[in-house]
Length: 176
Image (cartoon, rainbow, N blue to C red; front, side, top):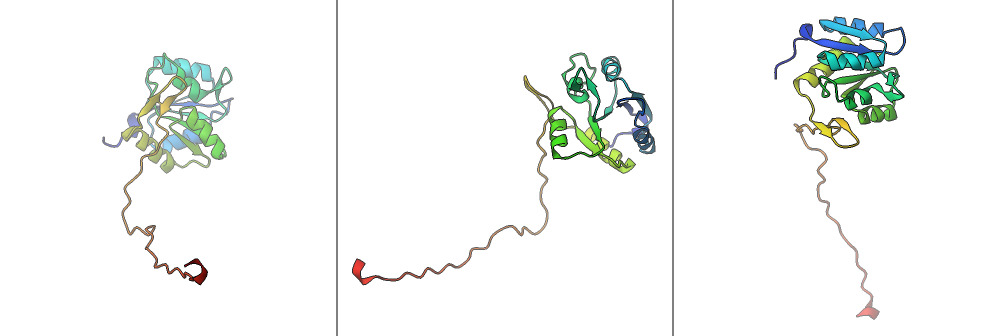
């Protein structure tokens, strides 16, 4: 698949409160995203996802619907136009537990501050050009959590060379 034309993309930006993540909106513009819809109401964002088609969603870490994280609510929605949409969580400072929870909620990837336009281009481009397979179970719907292993090129240095081992055995004349 060829690289996506970022100018033609429609992106939904969902944040909590009135700040609207202005920095991320600016970064999306710098990355060349043509159309950004920004909402600060998660319930309204879910409704919009069921009515309109978007190419990706970026949401803040604290965004929730009825106490449930927005990504989990979006993945669970049976009315969404595209449940397999790339969904990125924007986190101020993400530790391993935050990333694991986001992964379990069905997030495609986690972006941490500071976010650069190149990071958005790389992550969004990868998600659109090579989408992950989706897993559907009674308890989970989202992208496959496993990362495919890339072929390794170069000198394999992890191979252990056999060592010559000499065992010294003492002979006890009483045991003969």
